[in-house]
Amino acid sequence: MQKCRLNGEAVYAFKVMDENDVVNVEYEKMLRRASEQGELKCEDCGADIVFKFGDVKIPHFSHKNVLVGGGCSYSKESEEHIKGKKLLFDLMIKDYPDIKAEMRCRFSNGKWADLYFEFNDGQKLAIEFQRKLNSISYWEDKRKFYKSINVKDLWIASGKRDQFENILREYEFMFQHRLFLNDNSNKLLVLDVERKEFLIASKIIVSDKETNKIIMDKIFWRIYSLNDIKILPNGDIECEFDKEFKYEVDIFVQAYLEEKHRAEVKQELRRKEVEERNRKRIEEQQRRYNEEHERLSQFTDQAKNNYKKTNDFSKGGYGGKSYSWNGYKKKTNSSYSAYNRKNDDYYKDKVNKAILEYRYGMDNLVRILVNGGSTEYNTIKKMFEEKINKGDVRADRVFKEVMRLAGLD
Image (cartoon, rainbow, N blue to C red; front, side, top):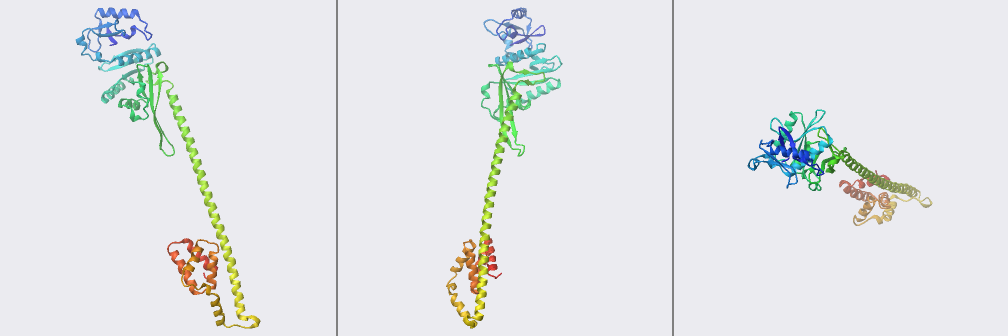
């Protein structure tokens, strides 16, 4: 026990010896005198208290009657809790020498605050140092009470840095830590009593502004010596944490945006490459089509000229002799015997090569149609129609072009 009452005023055993183990002899004499005269009282149960500082190196109070002390809740306070409160108490006294400070302050309604401070400007602050929070109702009720009396409250958890070194996400915290984190402006405050260090943890959640997708979700934490922090009257912590937190977020966002930009540039280059390949492919197809069209046009013109010459010859003949139509027809059929096939394989081959844009494929079909008759025409047309009816767009295009060049469209 570190606190009791002397004539109604709070006195503290830890004030007998400072942080450098230098003893305040006058303060020790005052406590010993009051203890011998029975003037020290437990502020929890009102029983007599004695001051002890001898074989036990740490100055402390205890109940004079052990049986009475066993039933007092103050006697059950752990050593870690006592030391933690003393560290915070000394920190506030150092930063605010004129502050009104009390450890284990009892309010008129019987509620206790681990630490209570009143500042010169009228602000009031209660600090709760919690080893373990067993009841959410207790926490909510106490916060509501502090708000009703216009007292700011700061909740600090007890812990060690080893507990937090491997924590990456919020769900990995124990409930008490998640509670403090979300209620205290996204800051979990932890006091490591043994190392006299102050740990601050916050969660970083960053979203892509364009997609609203979460791109970063992690716990960011830093450890500071108690001498490197200052608890402000409103409960905020003054240190380098906010600056380091912002730097961590800015660095990540900058790296993410740069990577995103590189990915977008790479994607745009791929798109342009595909676009260029498609353009060249279309140009090549158009070039080949134009060449084929030009060859077929030349062939058609030549076929028409040949036909004209043949027609003129049939009328005049050699030496002015004329030939009958039956003779010409017989001669023509004889000269065309090469096209008279026993099956359709020959024409099917010619049609397929024309559709597949074989060189002179269309030329051959035009030549057959110009020199052939209705049998050749119907056979070739039927083969094209079979493919066109199956949805072959290329066959439709080639058929129309062949008919046009053969003068049969």
